[in-house]
Length: 144
Ligand code: CA2
Image (cartoon, rainbow, N blue to C red; front, side, top):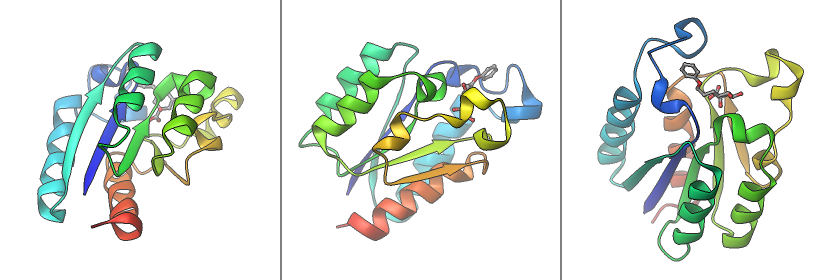
């Protein structure tokens, strides 16, 4: 099984600011956690981070026929991007949405998720563990 893990804008800044919300670990730490878990689960992962909406759309389109599942933290684009929603709908790859923080207990604008209108599962507020939970969900449901 092959899973594409996408992280959106500013996730590359993890550990540098706002540790009270997003923790002290860095994006490199997050990548290590995901890669180690993927090895343990006997699945392959590709990690992609971008600050650009169009690059994320391109990556989702390129996943067609390659990825069996997508784990995505669209970051701020969660709350704004119809383009990312449409790309996910176009490729029809099983998708889990992840948020490090609990978006439902923060500002009202973070309660709206366009990606959540396609994702079959949303995991929020579990820190980096949310990515692992999403991989486990996809493996259990679609693993081969
Ligand atoms: O909780 C999450 O994972 C979010 O997707 C993170 C986004 C935020 O816009 C979403 O509402 C919830 C923010 C990405 C990281 O932003 C940073 C900002 C400053 C320092 C480090 C990271």
